[in-house]
Image (cartoon, rainbow, N blue to C red; front, side):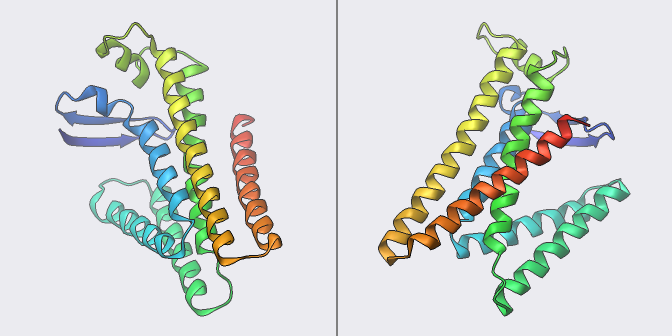
Length: 212
């Protein structure tokens, strides 16, 4: 499979031109790929070392987009630069001051990625039926007796499994670590409350998009 070109439209749509016929892998890649990488970032946020690795890889990926992609819209270009600078500042603060929020920023990005995947699946594939959607095209090439809305529901459930599984594994890992290090209950409660705060902020952001 080879990617010939990618178009991103102002209405949040787009077209990816590929050479190859692995449609069953290409069509759900945008939705489930976003959810999968959100899961990876959530799990990476549970440890400082993995959070550093995730932040570094994220910045490198964004810089590659700037260097390789052609005809990037000026606002997208500016957003990429802003995110890179923001993560750089957070990393410097993490290493040189007592403001240690790198793990929480990675957690927020991961939760946001996963929840927006669920939102996009619902908005694009379930709430309205478009004949040229990825799910409808997937239903055409898949022998299973399921239409596009059905595949949208299945993809949405998979995204929710990724999100809930990552949150559960991450919290379970923190519980085990806190138990082994004999951390106080107040410390653990703070971490749990922070995770809930991140989820709340993300859900609120999605709700604002619904009401636009």
